[in-house]
Image 1 (tube, one colour):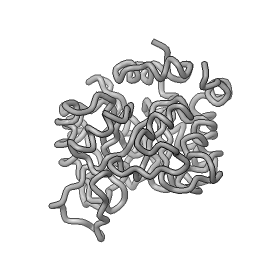
Image 2 (cartoon, one colour):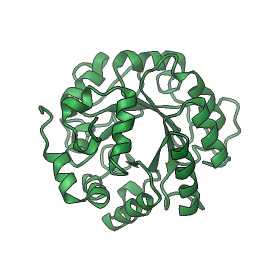
Image 3 (cartoon, rainbow, N blue to C red):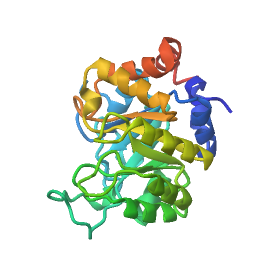
Length: 297
């Protein structure tokens, strides 16, 4: 087993879900996940956001806004097998957001309706298994009405239909007036079967402190899970000094993966911020290793 930050493409693409989890753990807090809105025209205009993210330091690619039942990804030739095509292009684990929408919840603002292919269900889980996704992220976009109770419910049934890693949690409220994350919520998700707990990065949501995050990280690690901090509040498009601070503050708290969101040109964080995040949490040596290592190795 190689740690993800040192692995060749052939190693990465052959990993099972459990091997990928161990590879991330072995990287000791130096793994970057880049989220991108896959249906938007990319910053460059004739290549995918995934290619840009990978080129500037992303280890994991998370697709947002994808209708997996009716896919329409930008710069992809074979929409029916888009995961296979993306893996050929970037040779990195590919995942997708599926949203556990609660149709009964009272919203703080107007609810945004999303298509069936973006919601977490047996049908969409079976489809991402067929497509060959490496991981799924149960979370909510702004205004979609995703609740922690619904996330827990969905996690419980996921392993019946999907063999990849399960990431679960909220980066922000998703329009619902409830705690974004607590130790009790973490316990529920872990017991339901989550592999990775998603939390807001310290510095991105009101009142979520380093103390809160450290407690969650310690508890999650004690129970065999990993933690991913998420910059999902448009601060991914901030100046590089802000990115560096977020990177170090959350690494100090012990997170295993650092997520950088999609609020930039064409549905991707500014490329220089992905690069700065990489340099901040793992230095130039490992950053160059990531961006320069051929996907044909």
